[in-house]
Length: 183
Image 1 (cartoon, rainbow, N blue to C red):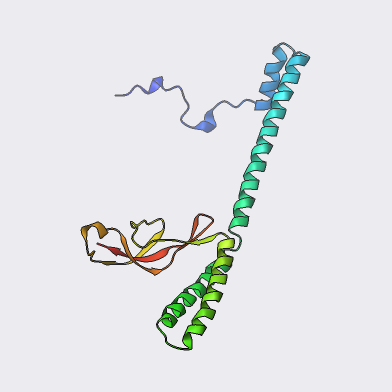
Image 2 (image 1 turned 90 degrees about the vertical axis):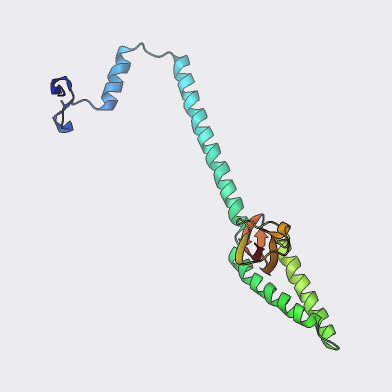
């Protein structure tokens, strides 16, 4: 049996004795009994407050500058993502035209010029295509569409084919590469 008489805390916090002093009054009362501060001590306290405030503001300034910089780097993300679909269409058209004969070759050259110009504009804005084929599968960069039996033991867990290219925008994944992985 537990002795309940040892418990000196009240069961209900509302039963605790209330004092009419607030914490600020207690603190003020504590300083009245202490020795008065010298001007040097007051100056040191004010310097400390100033340095802390300055440091806090400096941290705020750095943080907001970093956030603004990151925002500017990825500001056109939606536009660039929509442009990647056009790049995919260009790549498909180029593959079809490469196998064509005759006058189609001149049309292919025109498509290639437009494609190269579009790619150079995207690269100038920080967009880079991922090189995935033959590399180990990485969930940070790849999206596995399907698995395919690997021709060799070394090809297990390796990207065998790239269905849709992945892109990076200033080192961050803009679009995951859709790949076929060997198993």
